[in-house]
Length: 140
Image (cartoon, rainbow, N blue to C red; front, top):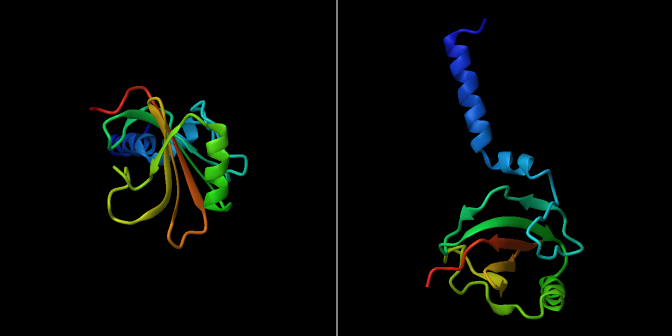
């Protein structure tokens, strides 16, 4: 029979495991499981999908899919513009979720309460694609 200290250590380990970012990855069913209902770029290298809605810096509560591709930023942006022709397009740096710590090249697309960010860092070799499926509008 395990001692109290072993039982407490196992309980703490289980709690840490369930609270880690990888726990959501495991619960989401593995890589490349975009369940937002918004389109996944065909050359997406696989990504991670949140398993629950979370608060994002703009005040909304969203599920988040993060993927990437080595394809050029212009190619990815062009594909999403064709797939989501009614989306409102803005500079990814305007009211950025990523703060003002670095300048990104890319766009933010808004479709109702949902949005995508498609960007590259200045010297990046991957185009990042982040899709946010939100259950509420941003605060006014």
